Amino acid sequence: MFRLEGRSWQPMQRLDLNGEAAHAFSCTDQRMIAVSRTRIAVIAGGRQSALRLSKPLSGPIVRTAPLDTGSTLLLGLAMGEWGGSLERIDPDTGTVSEVPGLGGPINGVGHEPGRPGCVVVTVGLVHFFPSGQVVEACGDKFRRLYYKPYTLQTTWPADPPKLPFQTVPFYTLTTADNCLWLAGGDGLYTIEKNRPIAFRKMPPFEQIEGVAISFAVPGLVLVRTNVDAHVSLGGGAPLLLPR
Image (cartoon, rainbow, N blue to C red):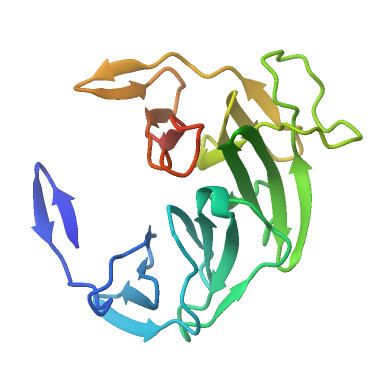
């Protein structure tokens, strides 16, 4: 593990993952957590502890979405056409348990504005047809927050009474300017406290040294990737980074 200081990378502690590749990494002001398929390593206060997970993470793992709540690591698994799950990992014991009822690739997990103890989960996949939704999870209770028929018509109503065959897939998310930003297959969405979910078109991208990137949205950097191209026909979903 390395840390960028100035313009150079400085080595840090070696993660005790028993030689396995790190599938997820979380970093907060309090601690850093790395997870492999069978182990979890926690670095806090300059000390490291490592444990074996109570059960191995299912695969193939294409993308993970970690969120450290302070007591639990929530880990969204996105396995493309093979689905996904939201796993709850206890960093003190290594116990792994699945939050029930959340099928499909989990692409993002973030704190829900104005709802302490609740998180927002994004689900999305393009496998011949697009599908996705935004879900609220509060402990073991969950409910659909939002979905929208997949269409280029921005005035099409969201949350129709009957779930349509094709829905907008949702990908990464991040917190910026006191709201939660979501990357959808047709644009950007925001969740703010006591306000309905808002939509805006995807901003234009520019090529910088071969990377498609956008600084058009204040407080955000958008970077296009193809990390899930071999398991999804969508591809090109942007990473959202606060700035």
